[in-house]
Image 1 (cartoon, rainbow, N blue to C red):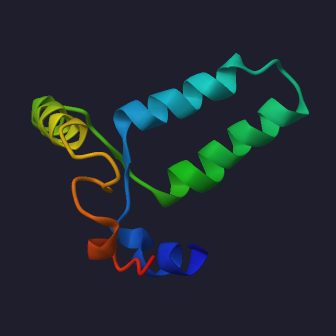
Image 2: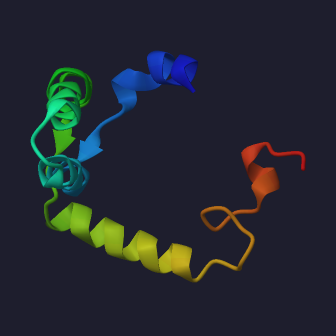
Length: 90
């Protein structure tokens, strides 16, 4: 996974709602070393590594359509496709 992230990290980003959830979860922790370490990691590693994408109307529309497609997928499939289409041999 780390090799893929290093190779493709320049193509990755974080959606604004994800950044909101990460920040929310961090700030719900009691003040202390754990929270401080997480705040530092989020700011200096995550935010420094990935741009935060705006959650505008186009993103909200795509999310709604994609979510509906995934919910309608038959059980036992991965994102609407069979596991074999992702290279799995099991």
